[in-house]
Length: 355
Image (cartoon, rainbow, N blue to C red):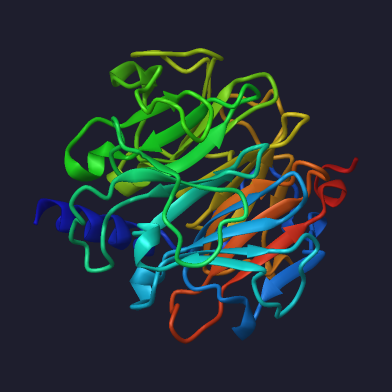
């Protein structure tokens, strides 16, 4: 019951945080009319199989992977995979779904250089009750399709996982929102490979870390770890905290982006491109805020993606930067997953950062 109550509180807090865009624009940022960014492609329609999507990832060939939390819409959870360049109302090239997959409230996901798929599996049903033992990261073979069992599970020290990412050496990072079940929040790190030992090689946890509702994470080009704190879900402070490469234990962030000028508004996910630019989706204002690579403190975004032209949904969730082109892939969904379609918008990197 405690877990159910916590989940409902999280949903209620997110709903309460929805405000109009204009009230959330940073006071010193350029006017929204000067920052128009329109998606160059949109994957949307009845044929796509998108249903309450949450996470998104792009592999080295440009294929797009989306986790679908169908359980919230009384449908089957899935991961849908779209061909590179997919646009419009197109069917998924592959769909991972079914009882053998072990998918239960899938969230963040990542694909390694060999095409192996890692999925953060929260193990909580749409009714808010726990599914015993399902808190884990599922690891699927390259090309996995249909009702297939994972190659392996990562379960050690996994507690309500929300996101997964890799560093340049292939080590696996997982954000654990432990506070949802009265456990510590943490970032756990695991050895590379589909058959690796699942014992963490290190963990970041403790009061000095300032981890608070860690929903998203990404590893930057220099090995720094970027974590989204959706703090206001717990009456805390929204922030992006950045840990030095190799950070472990009760380590303090090397820098923190937070404050009234940042535009952070119940942030959900973070991506960092090869040049170090930082992209954050904000549920509270249906926006994407973009920060310079060296941003710190009460930093004003260099770009605010929002408004009608941006075609973002009431709930802006996962974000990913394409490895080959740096384009931005963003999950949008409505508040009514059973009656209104969800979509993935693709934004040109050159239109966002200017080069």
